[in-house]
Length: 410
Image (cartoon, rainbow, N blue to C red):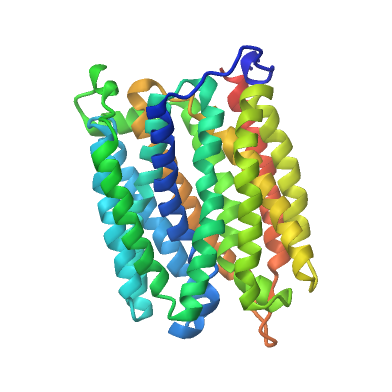
């Protein structure tokens, strides 16, 4: 194991330049847009299912359609990901993502929404990998814990700003409106990136493989990369199993009013916005694997508590949800910082594209599996939701083991 990964860093932390602060802000915004697009499907599920007259299995298919198309897109683009300016790749896929989001806002049937999610996934699924590649290119390892912590606050911001506003717009008008609003906001963000971000093309100075397919093949056959991909798949399982049905679980099983959902997401998001950068700093200072291990332990405990709750008061649910997300963030932030050091400079784009593909495909499978585990009872409650907690616990322990092996292989 690399000692630097677990021992405290005694040197003074490097400081961000003004341009680096701008880049982090824009990367966080792009992550915000992509994450919100997926996150909205979960709380809006309680509105979309009755509006389109579909059940949990069909809704799970809508969620997983994005994941499967994003996974396929990641694999198809992996061989070319290191052959172009990363800014140009980012803008190309972001444009398609905005178009797909607009389509979601115009969908009037299950089939149309399913097609819109496929298109959105084809483009949106690649954006996260390009964001991570840009962050790795522009920031040294000593800063990446803080960078990933700041970028991941986009997840929390989607809860604080996006989801409550989305729920308000959908209850005030219709469930289509949040997607239309997000497409408009995303367009403005894309214009700012196009105008202000400098090209990210230093990796093109290094000799490239002539064949894109051989570049993909060589990335797929590095043993350490395979361990990282497997860890990513296991970490993704939890979110894709729990999130698609969380709003229905909270409303139907826990007795929380649908109108109280924005409060749950708002408070949880505020907590994670505050905690996310602190976790990033702790990962840089205390050791990324150590913070990941602590986050795994906390998330396992909270997942088991959350999935076995009886009807509770709103304050209790908010506390449980907030601590659960602190545990999740305490895994994801140090993990992304650790894995950013795994690929060679000439394979960062393809590595991140494959990683994103694995993440989406495993998430899609998890959503489908969860849709078959969870059933709708005669009383309107979700049954067997606790089984998902046991599955997530197993995948979390397996991911911890694989990351430990990855650390030892350095």
